[in-house]
Image (cartoon, rainbow, N blue to C red):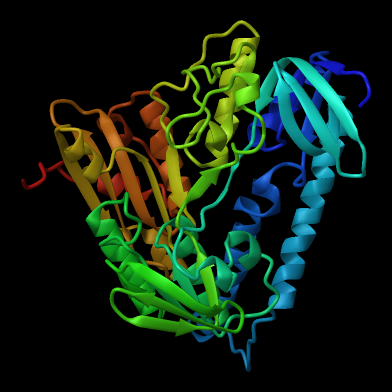
Length: 462
């Protein structure tokens, strides 16, 4: 082992928060290094957010071919080529990887490819990807370790070789019958995409509804969408065991039906990448659920060590990881940002999209918050008529005793962009009555707010 190399800033993991912190601090003149074991830029540009949305968009294009006559287009045939779908995705991923390498070069931050393990106070041994080892330390250390897909302890599941999102997003063939365990964001997005490509799809969800954290009306609308697209959904169903081999012939035994298919996808949650990296040796404590314990400024229990992103228990979105970077960087440069009371937007990229910011009705009732509600079917938004996409609805929660916007949910075309407009108003604490007076361009999705806010807020029935 060579002598210890010391950096001002040492980042373990090159995900969203880690890479932006490294680039920013390096450009400011700090000697900076990032240790990354495999995915330059982290999961988002390589195996998660962007690749999944790339493939989901290909599936949307495929769905348009099935509706071509509706748009006045005559097609003799349209067949999915999963090799073509993958080629488009891989070209995007390759270009993003080069973009990241360019950013490292321009910033002056050193990228060290290898497996890191903490061996003491702010000191790391790195088993280099191209052979050999290095010992490095940092005056300040930042843990950006991420999470990985959870594979539950179900008899026969591991032996069946199930796919997670990682393997499915790299699949260059179309499953004959894909069984999806889990009715959350990952399972729903990918189930719909595979169905649109032409696979038969069955979803098994142990909860009583899809998208368990959403309101019942949202879950019902999702279920109706999936039924209309020919996806079989089993709710309130526990998986008892798995037999066979994913990719050939697999059987999922439940407390209800036995579901037989060719391929198996598991999408039931995430597990933090906090084991086997030497956190205890560095004085970094974990929570009971295995995430790194941090305060509101993302400082860990070890001096001059911070954790960012999903490993710190932050909401599992790239945009939240970027905000973690913002919080940490601001405090390093004399600011006083915290993670307290962040207004976090949610978006699920089914088609149509589901977007939400702030409280939904379920959360408001759980927290005892009084509210009024405004609702509007997306069919009343003229933009959806031009797109032939009238499915869904929007609803806004208004405080019971003021005009404050508590939350906004949209299930419909261009929902994510529409949600962002309301989020901006919520950040500025603009009352809903001010939005009601705004002029929105016609015909846009945001114009739907004009018609939503013309209604009179009603108190929900008890």
